Image 1: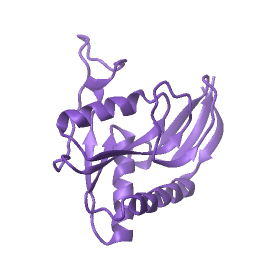
Image 2: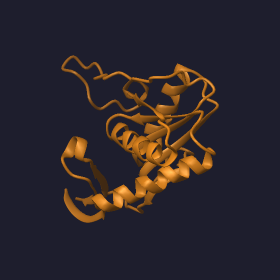
Image 3: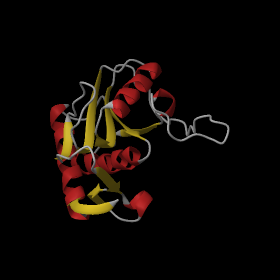
Length: 180
């Protein structure tokens, strides 16, 4: 695949996350009963960055957790040699019962990852509310799922792919559209 366009550079990603952090605080009238849960892999790093910004703005820390949705996917792609799914495990540092959980992911596409994330969360407890924060919403939903907080809406064709690179994993911050 070749790079068609850079959608967000490092500075634009930083600005988008700062705006999302403000929107989370405003919508929830603070962060008292909130927890950020990042979906593996890049959602975790985005959740941590949002937590830093929220802490700077509010002067209080917000709990951050990691969610592995592997076993909840209906299209498992990464498996071991014997065909079993590769599971990294979840790390949720607080009870989510009666909390507002903000699920964080890098790209919202068909909605299947988010559905799997919600299924995994509900198996852990019953949050009072689940909200969704994504860096990129590219459309093409297969399920009736909508993000509460979006860094950027990027209309794409089915043949294009969104590539999110984050320093923690990819050694640079950039979002680009790739095409065949």
